[in-house]
Image (cartoon, rainbow, N blue to C red; front, top):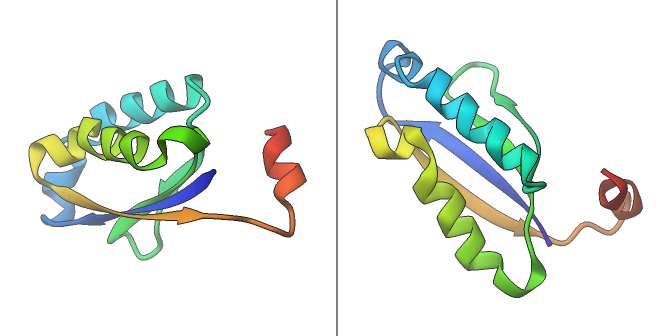
Length: 97
């Protein structure tokens, strides 16, 4: 299963940036575990997006754990909006990543 996570900033950007290194370290760890395929800020910079691959048998628990572990969420500077996604066209390419 795949999912999009939209991270919306709840505080001014200067407050968010105080936590960006911890957030990026967290995302690198998710990538290393095979959960994160890609991530980056939105333009304009009001938040960011993540493309995730999660186990089919634990979709919601995994997505909750990903959200709850983010330093942005711990610091109260951002919130997640998560959408499980069932790609059709291009799924083979995603599966190879």
